[in-house]
Length: 349
Figure 1 (cartoon, rainbow, N blue to C red):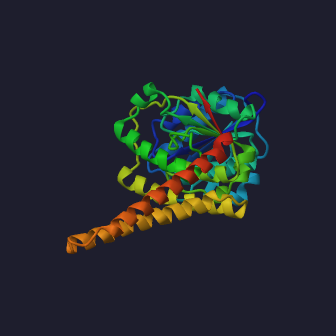
Figure 2 (figure 1 turned 90 degrees about the horizontal axis):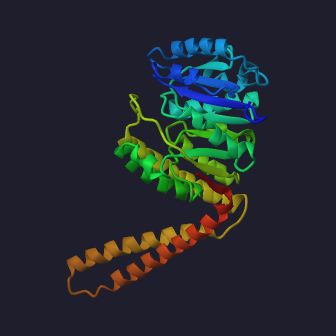
Figure 3 (figure 1 turned 30 degrees about the vertical axis):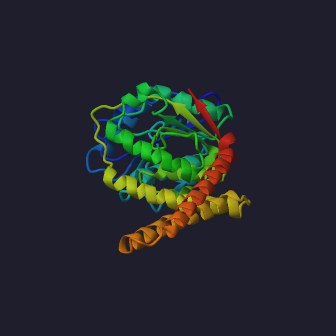
């Protein structure tokens, strides 16, 4: 336990032989449960998990936390995974089919919910996360200052310098889009998978319908915002070693961007029209429609001018006014949106 709170760690692993065992063996002693999910690996990942679990059990004598997922979580997990008996504090879970990073995180979250742990941390199995920093993620939750805490590698110039350039560019693009989609305008580095979430927050969101791809962390932020959950952005470094990323950024960025657009529209409808009413939802929609009309009108006016050079550019001027008005309306909506979520965000240096 950590400061009186039970802690579970979700450890998704796909072809992480040579890494996942070290992560399990180096897990802090205050962690009560380690949900190690083998996402249908084709190497020796599962065997390494089991070997590391046995070694960890010999070194630690942690007591069980509540009921094992083989009891309480059997219904939720039966269609997607096989849950082995716990080996010490490690619960080995085998996916029946490869579900990706988001799918493995979802499986771990379902198991943590079934066990009723107070705080659930997500840790990658490739050794990129400094386990000594875990307490900094747990502190805001244990202190009651946040419902969800996530690492931020972009706050410090030193931390940014350690990130490969191609990752930094893709991260910057998705950070901006996630700010708009989620409503957490001060939160950065949404792709950071080093997170901690409280039991109440995990129970409040629809875990079953979490996005099962690398954009699961972006999707989760949107759902947390709709439920009014507080988010802490914790500055911390990443560790880059010999591991290879399986993310194809040429597909990843467009796919997650489209998901964020759908989530943005869902958030506006659910938070500002269904659960409550706020005019910023209409301002967003009318602003986007007006700006788009202006752009379309400008294109038509340009085509008309090119075909008939002597025709006055009245349509172009009108289109420009529509675009400016629509953009102003969008900025007005964003300002209201920032104010609505300002109390839900905090930064930890």
